[in-house]
Length: 174
Image (cartoon, rainbow, N blue to C red; front, side):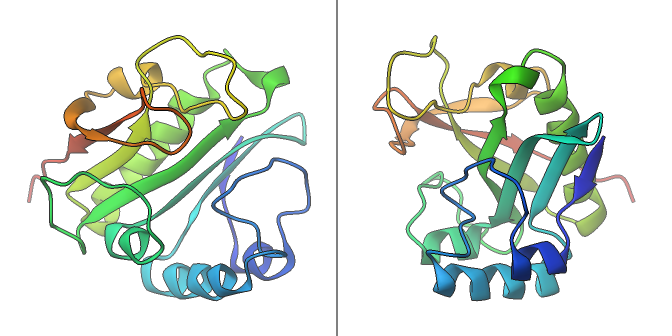
C-alpha cells in the first residue's frame, strides 16, 4: 500500500526507521520548515509504502526551485524550476525489494505530477550494478520502465561518481 506523507508526519516524524538524508526533521530543523512550506504549496512531499502494515519504503520529492536552494544536484539543461519535480530519495527496505514497490511509487509520482501540472521529473540514479559504497544509489532500472532518460552530461554525485541525472518529460492532453 502506498500513501502520501501527511503534514502531521512532517511535524512529528514519520515514526519508523527508514533513513533518508532528505527528510530528517530532528537534525535539520530548517529543512523541516521547508518541508512544511513545500507541503502547503504542492500538497505533498512524497510517499510511504507499507506491506502488511509494516513500513517498506519511502519516496521524497520537491520542486526543483527548492532542490536548488538546498544544494541538490539537478539537470543543468533544464531551468523550469517551478514546473519540474525532483525525486530526492527513493528507498525500499532491503526485506521488501524486488516486489514492485519502487515501480508503484514512480507511477504514483508521475500521476501526481500530471495532476499538479508538473511537466518534468528529475532524479539522480545509477545505471550500473551497486558497489560497496556506504550508501546505495537509486537504481535507474525502475525509472527506465517509465521512459526516463539519462542525462549523460549531468553527474548526480550524491553518493557515487557513476550516478547521473535522469529525467522524464511529461505531456499533457487538455
